Length: 199
Image (cartoon, rainbow, N blue to C red; front, side, top):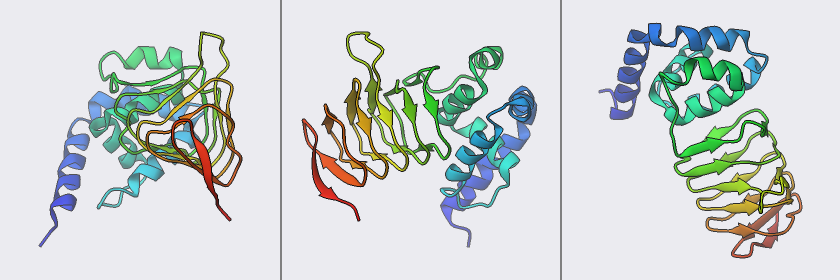
């Protein structure tokens, strides 16, 4: 007997294939994008959460059709000019906002980024975050956070200003980060403090 999750994923895949014509411009821009490898890495991360096996193209089609959060990062990856041509008729999720000038590394892991604003200077590879995340500048001074590789943020984390988060850092839910956090650390609280070093 097929489990419900697999049945759901197969049904969603079928709908994605049925509506392939809608995503022809997206697929074309994917193949033309200089960030094609980064988009492939985003698809690869999300595919691990499915109960069906998909190659890159079917995975891309699946997430373009079924995941409005993924469409936000897809439009960011292909660039502002190209996204303007297609975003209007298949928009992403309106409460998930990524600054066009933010540089984002590979394996961007969208858990459930409802009500999230990403306005960092740089985000490294393997970034994991949850809903109500805010990364940005203060007082319109354009000094924004720099996030290293392999960083995980819990829900409702706020990181504002000219702050550096090192590699391999975990920041607990509800934390407000006001100072740099060194690599290989776990930080929690408001203001956030390092409570443990990861070996």
